[in-house]
Image 1 (cartoon, helix red, strand yellow):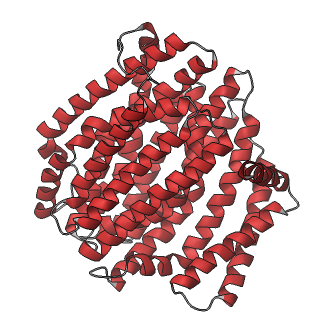
Image 2 (cartoon, helix red, strand yellow):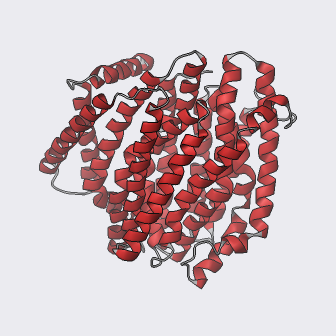
Image 3 (cartoon, rainbow, N blue to C red):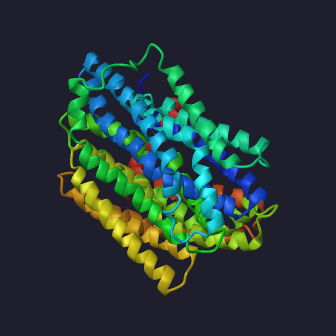
Amino acid sequence: MRESYLSALKSAVLWKGIDRCAALLKHVVIAGTIGLSAQLDVFYLTISLIGIIVFSWGGLIDVLAVPRLVTSQKEGKKESFDQLTGGFFVLSLSLGIILCIVLYVFRGMFSQIPFGLDGFRRSLLRDAFLWVLPVALLYIPLRFLGAVYRAKRQFSLFYQGEAVIALVGLGLVFFFRDFPRVLLWSFSCGVLSAFTYLLLQSRKKIRLFSSPFSHEVITVLKIVPGLVVLQGATYIYQFSDSIFVSFCPTGSVGALSYGWTLAAMIPSVFSLGGAFITVFSEKRVSGQSGENVFNDLVSLSLLLGITASFFLILHGGSLISILLERGVFTTQDTSATYKTLACYSLSLVPLFLLPSCVSIFQVINRIDLQVRRVIFGFFCNVVLNYVFLFHLGTGPWGIALATSLSYLLMLVVSLHAVNGQGIRINWSRHIHWSCYLILICIAASWICRIIFAYDNSLSIFLQIVFFGLIVFGGAIYCPLPESLLFKNYLRRIIKKAC
């Protein structure tokens, strides 16, 4: 059944919420068991390297497939749609096999990339790649199946698949937390389970095997060279932080990863960009610019991003203490993790908006704009990391701050590029809206500090609820155009619920 954009957001909140909660609970279990240790550092370094080698190709397949699948679906070209799904599924499986072999053969070379690692952690990293070979094999076809469901406006299935990864991982980590390398093989089992789930859902609905050399597939593959540069640059950009943090003491990778997990949780739960590429593609096929839906998305992103940033900066330390500080996870670990969380919180608005900017560049076939944006952000990130780490001696929190500042700069460049493509951004509207939100968040923080004197679990929960009610109440009844927008959203949600 086809789902609207609002239904997609509701599905994202539900299933991505389950996904993120399961991932958070897994971190809670692991924090109490191994703390900020070499084992945790190696796990996150492995995932970062897998990002470059495997996840980047998964993103490439996603980018290639969705706009063309949406066009075929919209124009009723069933045979073209089937040729694309079958051909790309065969390609994704073949690519998974090749990457699995590459990862196995060159695992020793890949373990040398984090230059600052000591010998013990480097040895652990080399062995870790063996335990994530199923991820290398199945992640790309898994992402392609998700892309097909998104193109068909069946967003719930896509989000359910991602939730399966987290739920399986949580279950295995909880019951086998004392087993060696559980973080690694539980992730592999999660990907295997999600792939099996989406594959079973595709029976009699999607053609999975056809020629990867059909006209439809070859036409799409013509833009691969530019996208390879884009996807590779994106993940190298993200991995640059891991190279710099390898020069920090043991536990620093874990502190950064926990901080990033908590900061990125809200953008990943709402997943505003997940359905946007489908909606925007349909607007373009219909001859519309899509600027209205994008400006509405900017307003919603500012509301969620600014609100979440304020709350995490003010209450992130208490939140980390309640969630993670048990077992071998110490007060010092809490302090180190909070510093990274506070710095990462500055990147929330870009985390909400950048995926949608990427979707626009994909749909209008201006991959060059995206490549320039990523390269610009990469150099900003490298320079800032070098200055903060080696000249100012900030440690892990400086790396987090460098990442957030580079994301903010990338967002400015991306919005300027979007505006230059005839998709007019209402700058005045968004600046007024941002200033209003900042004032509301300051007032909400002050009120919460007066009402809630203690930072226990119940108090933190009540502060989240109270803070959110004040801000969203102010958004709905504000003297700005956003008031009508959010009232319409609320009216549609209530109507569907009834």
